[in-house]
Image 1: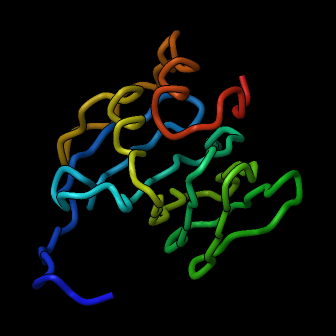
Image 2 (image 1 turned 45 degrees about the vertical axis):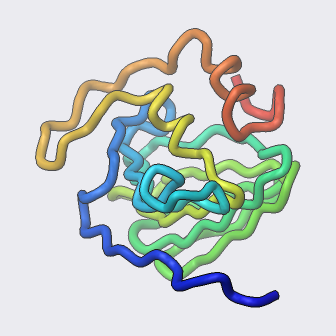
Length: 165
């Protein structure tokens, strides 16, 4: 394949992306760093997610998407198709299509990870279920997921019926 021209380049500083407080049970927030909104294509999207102590990202899977997670702060564990794996700073997780995965913060502080989804689209989910976050704003009280979360999942990047209730 022959290159057709120079690619795009940009830098996103900490707290420089779209950011959304996340509902229960994850709490914390997600910040989108690269997506079709600034990349110009949907080949992938990437960002940072912070999971509050004692919280978790529900078990789920993606239909055709591949997900890469890199943990850089905190401690916890992931369940990959029901098998537990501890995570510490430096842990990388890959979950291919239809692989169920759950992320649990059972540490004392925040669990921070960089996520990449290929193709992209996770930003649409974070925006639909979350609340807009401004850097430095106080953490809101925990809030519930939208009542139509299953519909939101089905219309974004999740395999239908793949998540916990």
